[in-house]
Length: 123
Image 1 (cartoon, rainbow, N blue to C red):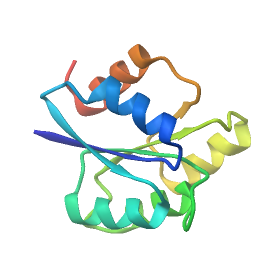
Image 2 (tube, rainbow, N blue to C red):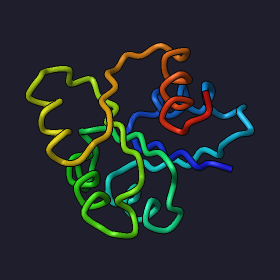
Image 3 (cartoon, rainbow, N blue to C red):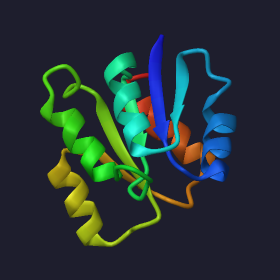
């Protein structure tokens, strides 16, 4: 079974993603509420895909992404930045940190499902 980690400090986003992804038996959903928790959980659980909010307490998504991509144990993890910041400079900063994708809020649950399936090779 594949693992998907969602790191976001907004309860509404966590609830929406859990409702959207939580009923699919092809993967399990892990959640973190800040950057430090996300980094620790990713290192422990080695998820196949991580959605990272950019602006989180304790450690921002860019720093978490960079830390995961620089480690031999976690560099294989697919990372998608999940953020309301849609400017080109933010997208470039995510690419520079090693992100594999960029997904802006608000988002369609259907589009989120498609992105997960695509990134995990489930299509």
